[in-house]
Image (cartoon, rainbow, N blue to C red):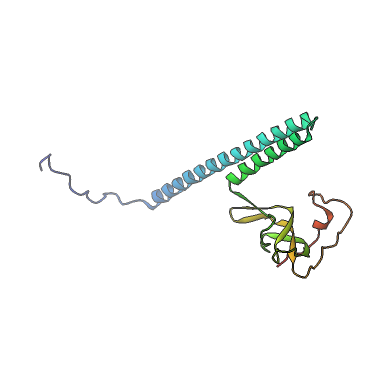
Length: 180
């Protein structure tokens, strides 16, 4: 054999693979993949927590300063903090729904009241948003609570009590049916 000749194909492995070795190797590869997924999840969680921490700091500064002599500037500052938080969480995949003008969908909207459709409004069109809805990775985390238009004006759902709900919604949003 000439040392300048290219090597030939490898011969058969003299030791056949051991099934226990193959299983151990597969388990090792699986644990490496799991560790990588856990590390990515931890990093993602830390990013979200830092966004929340920044928002808490901004809220703390706003509360410490108070509205002072310019309530309009205070309101703009609160809006800015809310927009920054919304931008951060939507950047991480949170979807916001429940907007005036969209069509109410029984899968994502809880209809708290129905009103006569104003001129130009379609049936099931959202007229008022009582609480926005959120979806993450295709899963509805919370349905939007809305008031919708109906031809013929079915009227508003009657209030169920005199105090606000524990989630900050008005009493009329505590009851209602899903509109479909």
